[in-house]
Structures are given as structure tokens and as C-alpha cells.
Image 1 (cartoon, rainbow, N blue to C red):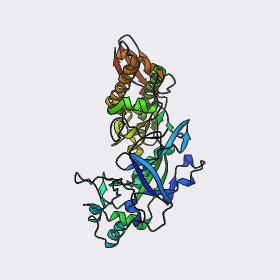
Image 2: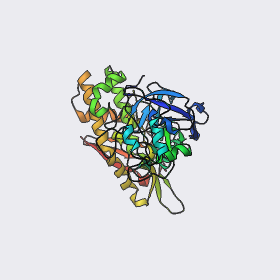
Image 3: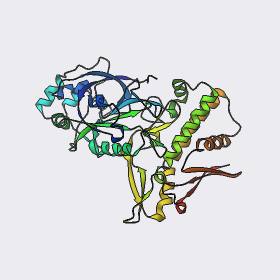
Image 4: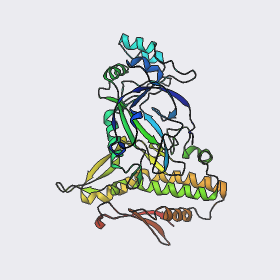
Length: 394
């Protein structure tokens, strides 16, 4: 499937990379690459290898319109995070070449910006990676090494695209900026200079369709368009799409117990939790309805005492529960609009949830005439920490 989106072109350079150890056996040496906007091609001393076509993905990302690999039976596209932004963060205005030149006091950098090695494609907006501190761990328009390493470590814990049922868009490589490019980019800042290493994340994504934010096409703002794009054109496909959505989002709500471990030295319990990343903007949906979490930089291990484990599990569910139910409702409304509704919203949801969780090792639905409760187990098999969460009042 060819992805839709605003086209953009990036200049390709050879790069030193760090590779996902889970994927080293694959033939991915061709991804030892750095992709820069043409507006900054003059900042690089090396000769470019060529220009590659992408489409926009999020504020500082790009994705290839055609798939580049198949993992776990799913076609994946190459996504590059940290390729520059088109918007001035301190003004409602484009970040164009003239604006970028005013950010640096280095006459050599200014001269290089005036004379890019590769001319921008006509009609495409100027785009810049800058050296301004942004959200602490990254430069504005780019990516910081600390965040990229966190994303890579999560990817390396997974079995290709699945971490105990939690589906991820894996980081394949971290591409490191050469020192001279890093220093030139670092000079482009408004107030505070980003002093840590600057990199790009090269990752694999099944689409560029997000749940609600950070994409031109989302489930929340255009379920009709998503159904058309993904070819959901029959009642059977629509139901399968919903089941896949539920099968993949419940693990997202229960990642902490799925990755739970106990440290014998201090008696604390550790599991993966989310920080400054969210289901509605940091996950994409595959053509079959499966949700893959993309922005892994905000997933880290957190520790709590035993008596706080259940509270942490419930907090993680509530963190994404609204976004989960909202997205499901948009999908169900579009299915009903196309192929006919059902008598009860709740009964439909509970029935599909029961199908979706049939093979889930960690979550079991307990359905009675009054409610649907999910029993949440854990990777330790510790029954004393099983959690009962009421999901639907019938």
C-alpha cells in the first residue's frame, strides 16, 4: 500500500549508526544513512548519495510512501524521526531560510545555509533541524541521543514487533550526526543551546495514520477516510478491523503488568510505563486495525513497592482509557454507518472484546449479566497481584 501524505524530499548521506541487536541478522546495511532537508545540505562536508522521496509524518518526521520490509507478516515503511520542522516554535510563522540564518552568529554557517548543496524541491516548505533545547531531551526539529537510546532499548526488548502483546514500531538504527554537522546545527538556536549529541531515529512503521493528533488523517478526525484508505469494504473486514484494534490496544493499557519483574535486592516491583507519550498521538494504526506504538522514547521502567502495584496498574489503564474508548467508538460508528448498526453499544463492545482477548496471556474478560470485568494477570504469575478492573457496566 502506498501511503498518502504531503510529499517531501530528503538528502541521503552515509552515516555511523547503532543497530537494533534484534535486527542485526537482517540485511539492513543500506540503512546506515542520515537524511537531511535540502535546506541544510550545505552544512555537511560529505557528498550526498542522492535524494529520496518521503511523505510528512508528524512535526519532525518523514515516512517512505512505499513499504521497505515485512515483519511478522506486516508491511512496514521506513520512518525517520528528527528531519527538521517547518514551523518557528516562537512565532506563528514558517521557519524559512531567512529566519534560520538569523539564529546563528557563525558567518560560515550562514554562508552554508545560503548555498545548499542540493536545492530544495519547488513547492516544498523550508525545513530545519535546530540546536534549540526542546522538551529537555531533544533539539527542536531533531532528536537527541538519550531519547533515541530509550526508544532503541524498548525495541530490543521486543520480539521484532511484539513486547508481550504490546505492538511496537521498532527502531532499526540510530544515525549519528558527524561532529562538524552537529556543531553547525547547534549554532541555530533562539535562547538555549542543545549540548547533547544529535541523532536521527530510523524506525519501521505500518502506516502514518495516527489515532487522533499529529497526522493529516486519523481515526478520530476521519474514520471514513481511514476505512476507504485501508480497504475496509465489507462487514467481515470491518469486524476483523475492530477485533484487531481491541486486541492490540488492551496490551497498551496493561503494559506494566506484562513486563513486571521484582528486584530481589530491594524487593521493589518494576515494569514499563509511559512518560509524555500518549495513545492518541504517539501510536499508528495498521491497515488491518492493529495499533502499533511509534514514539518509544517516553517508555521507561518504573519501580514501586508491592502494595502499590495494583494502583500503578489501574493508573496506567486510566491514562489511556478515554482515548481507547473514543477511538473504538469512531471505528464502530463508521462500521455501523456502512454496514448496519447493532442493538446495544455495550453488547457489541463486550462481544468483540471477548473475541479479541481469546488468546491473550495476561487479560481475561469476566462477563456477567451486570458487568464486564477484565482480570489482569502479570508476567510473574503472582496471583496475589492479579487486578480486577471493571470495564463495562451492562
